[in-house]
Length: 265
Image (tube, rainbow, N blue to C red; front, side):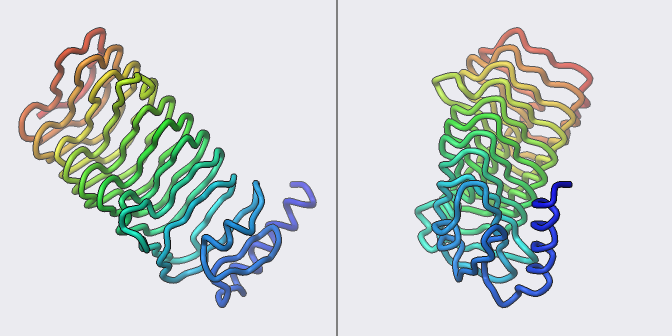
């Protein structure tokens, strides 16, 4: 470990143990802020912000390459319910450990590549986690629950990984991919629990080469999984698909797909 990394680790430990009075702390500058947005506005690319335990009412524009980490139980409630709680327009960002509620979307990655969304609990008035034109991102270990429309949606976004999430109680799709431009391709959906949604996993239109592996897809109200028009070269393997109304897997207009070693009941 380099001397700089060691010093940052020591500083982070000190602030976590002793900085509870500060709402948001920038580990790189030791700056302290009352709101997440103020901390973002005063940060530079590459900085790490610690958001200490408490309730925050705001919509955050994350337009820099930053890491945001919740320390303890941190709830971010939308100030404007017609906007995302976190709107991310920078590459290589990380959002970790928050409870996020009442935005139009919980987290929206808008042309944000190589970002990581992990260990959050998200409930929104539209989509929990939305990717728009965002590639090579990782969505992991989140609880995406009771969103009014879709749990996790990839629109014109490719080569992303959706892994180890619990996606439950969303009115439309648990996990959805789509976009007429064909960019929502070559994504990997693996090791997720997708339950009690409208459709469990919906590959809607013009999506290619996606991998759906080792998921539990159960108790969804319409179908377990749908492959719509022009979703060729999809690989569906080793999934447990059970107790869904309608079909376990429903294909229309898609060819050259691999469906193997699934348990469908």
